[in-house]
Amino acid sequence: MKITNIEVITFRTTARSRPSKWGYGVWGDEEFESARSITKVSTDEGLEGYMMGGDRRYIEGPIKRMLVGEDPLARETIWNWMDQLCTFGHSLPEHVMGSVDCALWDLFGRMVELPVHRILGGARERVKAYASTYPNIGKPEDYAEHALVCKEQGYKAYKVHAYICWNPHTWAPAPQVPGFPKEDVAVCKAVREAVGDDMVLMLDPFGVYTLEQSLWVGRELEKLGYYWLEHPMVETRMAPYRRLTRELDIAILAPEHVPGGVFTQAEWVLQGASDMLRIDHNYGGITGAYKMVNVAQVFGIQCEMHGGGWANSQILGATTEATCEYFERGLLRPDFDYETPPPYLESIVDPMDEDGNVILPQTPGLGFAFNWDYINDNLIET
Image (cartoon, helix red, strand yellow):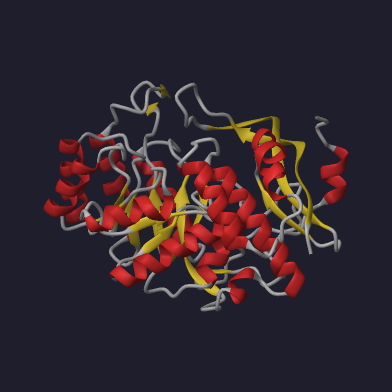
């Protein structure tokens, strides 16, 4: 079997969240046109593989030249080729590498008629979920009320994204740095008081703090019994994270967005710069993420998946709770219908049972069920 084509399908859809000029904004009621893409790998035997996302400039350029005529089952060889482009030539973004790798895994799963997590060994079919909030959803009491609603829905854990690229006093966009640590802690206190002591809580400020602010916030969260503090500072500087991890009792979860995937994150472990690791399919695809999970298991630390999604679900299904404990379900906001799939999909990736567990996909490959009628009706021509 040989790869005959790799392409990016782009189509129009709608969204209701428009970021500010500094990134995150607030969720609006007005819908606007948005574009989505799908990476598709085709073979001479009629088998195909898909992954949401993809950049046409790279995939239909250097990646296509590299992969057409190659064996789609030689994923490790292809992964190393793409990794060389990422690290030596710096000519391929890691998230593009991830899209291609995931599409190849989807193809293999469809070929053998198994979900990818079963191919990887299969450890579980359900994963504990935590509700992950959209940033800037309101005042502390708004977060508290939202956390109570999530608790009533069956969630046993709740992660706060407080004020990110947003000024809570003027209620207007603001640069990512400096952040608002006192206001963030006020949100965290309100949530803890609302849900009580039996709900697991986390905070992700998305790199908005200085070292001194991170130390103060971490100590406040320790008083409130929070589980982890995620990505509190810019991650290009490892030294502040080493000090933070050394001086705080609360678990520091990082890095989240540094390039290099498994190779960079392994160095963070050796340097003592984090207590828990973070990975997702954008950093080397399923192959790269699974390598990272295994490294974390060797070191005896957790590796929490960043975000939900079809590819991350397969990693979670192939690992135990001792290494990857939670499924991040979100981003959530009050009055948002999270259970209805977008118009280009037939189902959501993460239906939840009454006990607060995400039921992982059980269909072949990554589990996608595309609404091709909608996609074809809204194609964006190249």
